Image (cartoon, rainbow, N blue to C red; front, side, top):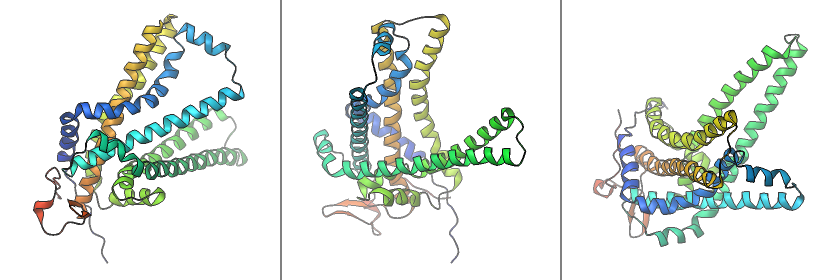
Length: 319
């Protein structure tokens, strides 16, 4: 059987819908994205902690005992759980908005009892697989260095080390980037189709099949906007740290708090945009594969020839 050619997916409507959904209910999404603040502050805090003299003094005097390690592990687990909850609520809200069935804030929060564990388990499986890929990369890098030394290609590690490191990093970045991109819809799959773990990742990968590279490149434009916000949230505090170190500056407690909030806000906006975009993109890909569900009284079913039932916001075209 001949393989069907890849088609171009018109994502202009997807970008417009993502923006429209956020703007139409910006207070609603701001309230939901507050749950992103702990993880955003956790990312921003280490950059700025070095600039506050009082905080640095307390950190240097504190001992990393067993109790502190336990507290840190508990905090990391709590931040992770809160982040998964936020992804679940924003994804649930956006998915129902796309299908023309906006939900109240209370309904969205109640949905966590059904959506949290599938998303938590899926994210855990994805994290384990990424860790395994990373370990494979590190082992292969070590084997290449050892092989080069055994064959006599390496007299000095200076040039060979950096060349091998750059080459492996580029290959690793491309592979992980492709994998993460094709797994990006797993959260929506877990919520909309009640699939857990590897099956959700596999389903997300399948949705990207038969979509041309040109369409995927266009789809990355919206992710770039999210990346800019995340970049600003991370690079601005880092730049402040670098300049302050160069000039031997320190910041007050108030400035430390303001900079942390500033960086965390940009990170929150970037993560919000990415989560909404994934939810909208999921429905576009479903329509692209002619399997978009429609909402009726009995639940979600596959659409028949009744075009009127297809949600208004979905606008898919092939070329």
